Length: 327
Ligand SMILES: NC(=O)c1ccc[n+]([C@@H]2O[C@H](COP(=O)([O-])OP(=O)(O)OC[C@H]3O[C@@H](n4cnc5c(N)ncnc54)[C@H](OP(=O)(O)O)[C@@H]3O)[C@@H](O)[C@H]2O)c1
Image (tube, rainbow, N blue to C red):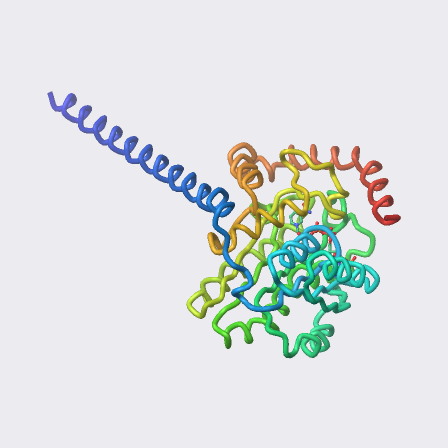
């Protein structure tokens, strides 16, 4: 008799735990679907007026890829542009193009973010007096351009410093430089471009993925600190976008063009402080976390397979890199 009572008690407890678990996941998934709908569907219909943040937008790494696409889209939405990159020739070409296409004012600043802290005092002077409403911390670089182990690059000592300066120092120093004026005016938008590679550890992209998780954490903390002062900080973590960095892989349902990515991502401003940028990238992110979890991604088996694949693809990628340089 006692055994039967104990058995029915434990099966009721198990049933209860099971129901709570199912309910928890149902609520979680419903919330994720609703949130996704608001961020990626409603944002197509109602967009935040970006001009309301201020007259000027500053974009780092603005001469090609995602940065160029953000600059174009911001100009299209009525902002004047400060473009920052290394190549003066490319900067003037893009500035002219934006002025003639969108009838906006532009300024250019030549700077190499790999050089470290020395570049920021000159930049402060060049930005003085502008009403900067938006800062897009876009500039970023890969460790090698291909998948590779930490030590498998020529001159790792120099490369490590360059990547950290470009991917981490630029985001923090540019924010330090521009945020005070935004706080004074009680409004501003900072967009930091992280990467999907930051959502989980990425062997063979170790430095890149680690620098990008810095960007994500920095953005989310900054957002919490300054939200009450009227500042919006948004972290954007794309999957693959067809740019020089990705050797201009062809656009397909999974790979976005930079222009369409920037348009979709800018629509999400005001809807979320962390986004994959577009619905297809958000779905890929979910799929990857389900089908390619950490334990698998970090296993020696997977890392060896990736190394083999990278080795096989290396000649093809090097050829694409050479073609990009000629362009
Ligand atoms: N493409 C993707 O699939 C992808 C995915 C996730 C995240 N992201 C992130 O998105 C951002 C943009 O990537 P992208 O693919 O558009 O790159 P990209 O096509 O290589 O463009 C990089 C831009 O930054 C400038 N730049 C590069 N190094 C610089 C330096 N040291 N100092 C100043 N400017 C520099 C380049 O112009 P100059 O050559 O004239 O300097 C160019 O305008 C990066 O932060 C990247 O990590 C990209």
